[in-house]
Length: 203
Image (cartoon, rainbow, N blue to C red; front, side, top):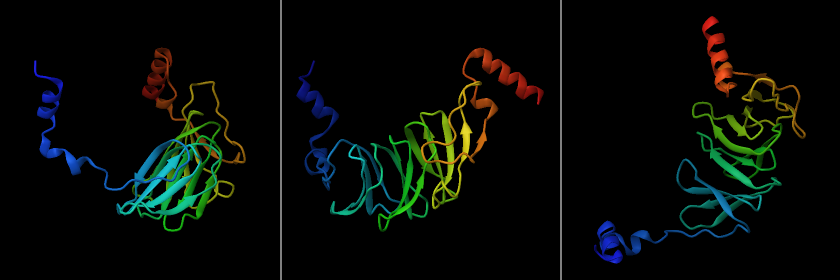
C-alpha cells in the first residue's frame, strides 16, 4: 500500500492546495459557539447566530460587522432570509422567533407562542412576509413576519399524536391562534397509521 501522504496527494492534487483552501475572510466577534450562518440573497452580507444569544450581520467581503441584533435570551438555533432580502428571521432556544430588517438590524417583529425550543424557521419563497417555524413542542406555526404575534396570531399546525395537545398560547403569546390538526401528520404507531388511513379512505 502507498504511504498515507502519497494516498492523500492522489486524492487532492497539489494544484488544489495552497491559496485555494485558505479562507477569503475570517469573521470574529461572537463570544460563544457559533452554529448558524447564512448568506443574504445578494451574497454581499453574512448573517450569523450564536450561543451568545446574538444575531449579527457582516460584510461578506471584508468581515466588517454591520449590525448586532439583540433581543433573544437563548441560543440561536436557525436563521433564514426572505425572498425580497428585507428580513432575516431567527429561531431560538428561548421559545421565540424574531424578525429583523436586514439593512438596519432593527427588530421587525417578536413572534411568541411556542412552548419549547424553536428548532427551525423558514420564509415562504413566494410570499416574503410569511414565515414558518418548527418547534420541539410538536407544532408548526405560520406567522406574519412583519407583525408582532400579540396583534397577528399565527396559524398553528398541531403535529402531536392523538390525545396530546401542545400549548397554544406560550409565554406572552396569544390564545387566539387557529389550530389545525392534519390527519396524516398525527399518526405515529402502526395502529394509529392504519386508523388514519381508514379515516382518509372513508372521507
